[in-house]
Image: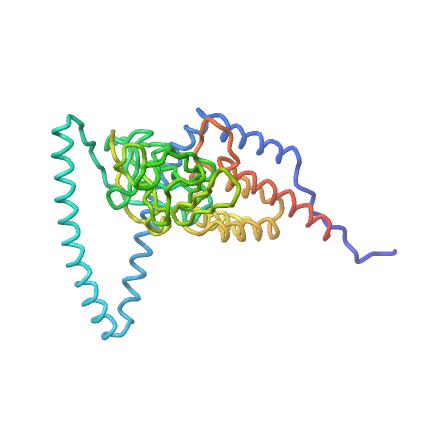
Length: 262
Length: 85
């Protein structure tokens, strides 16, 4: 009897029916806002715990390996950190005094300065290309969709896009395609700053506008800083000038934010 | 083989929470090549979008980026696997 040693593969191709089914179900989950909200709430009831556990494990490993570093290096680092802490104490004192003065001034004008809620960043924009970040404060602390999120006091980074019971998702102002009304420079030239991702913006202003590199870019109202002018691209003969703007800090390194509750 | 697949699924889910996107893509590609009909990568894409993207009133590719990428990777790599057999 002839036999052949060439065995045909017994594995079948993936089922098209199953693939189409998963795509349809996935599409329904992502495109219908009610369904998406339901699944988002379910995932975000667990996600903060997972992120915090991961961060704690990471910190435990770090503190474990610190013991193996040389004693001299640790002493030097300790002294350097103490000096930085002393400097920061002074800066915080200055900032608190300034904030107190602003509150007093605005109270006399009849404006109410909103409450600020501090939150820890669970997942930053550096890991994924979505330009969002997740924080560990939610409706339990009065956070609402649309609240502005700031870093280091006056530097804004985005606004609350989705909120859950104990966490929220922040959409960065620099998300690709997102337009934010802004005021550029000391002359407060109005412009729409379009997000380019990871703390970068671009704006278009009429040629001849008094804008220079390092000019501040503020949100309407003039109190919150969107970023700083990094570059001004002017082409001769064109009626508009392209302004490249960048946040004043590295967005991928932030670990704490403040939510400005309206 | 089933146990290996379950352990790999757990590893992929952990990667979505803790690792950068490009590493997650590498792990997903490896899973599609190694396992037969690795549909779990599509579920991983949905999880990625639910975790990190924001749903808005306007349609944006970024709101379904993970899922779209998972579909493209799955179809392309399964096609390549068919050709290589």
